[in-house]
Length: 251
Image: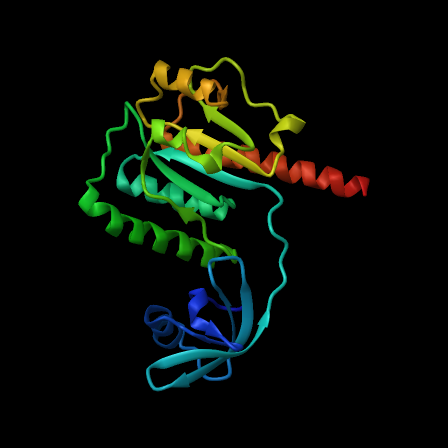
């Protein structure tokens, strides 16, 4: 049986001891019914994981005698810039993209987006989105959780300095070419851009091309937005793993 895993913010880990947040402490004690001395794993959502033993003092739960778990960071960072869609479907994208190894998620508003989030609700929505990716990271064994950004307009996203390097792929249902991996695609970062249910406006495709995006199709069928997002991530991630395996065979 694999060890139980818990999320602990980095600033709650000091000198080989981690203090579990109240929600995680409740889950450990009252749901999983773990006790003092049990061995568990924790991760900080920023790339570090540890194994240690449970200590219970009243309502507080700490993990002591922490030993760092070694892991190999992904060679290529994937960013998913994806149009906002219905809340339940967008949250499904967050969960599955986390499981597939996405490093950053940028919610977009586009011309044909039907979803707009009021400024007064953005902070609460971000808090919920971060809980979703943290929980998905815990479940799938990641040590880091994706960084979820505040929503940007598509035009704003084209001007983000951090996205100016690496390969940029936009998936468009009317594109003639399917994505075929080439060495140029395998840089330190790949940005994947996926539109809303209503598709992309031709002017947005023009703007993306001028900003350095390569435009590709995901196949002959019309996909739902959430399907397209996860298909794009899966296809690119699969090709990265194949390339890594080929390089390993050559070493």
